[in-house]
Image (cartoon, rainbow, N blue to C red):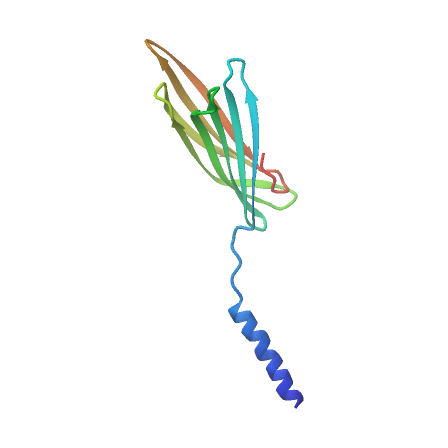
Length: 152
């Protein structure tokens, strides 16, 4: 009788372990937003999205939106990085960049990105054209991973 109970218990445990649904690789997602107001009524909105991939590995995107006074995004630059961390150090393994203009008065002239130790940085040059005048603006966005996996 004890052998039958033990066999049923083992069969039950095996059945639950086989039919349990796998857990997603992304454990948590967090978004932080800060706003910097300019004298002309426009503002720069910085958004950090953080995704925990596995324990000790995190990815995130930091975007700087350049908005007019109505809240429309005129253009933006962003960097995405993948990091590892262990409580003592952190390291950026890869990064990519993106920049886009949403206004006929702005064009993206160039965009580059690079990693350095625990940071990922993207730099864009945007040109504002109005009539015959034009001005170039350079903007950078840097995503940093702390040794505890916090992105800033």
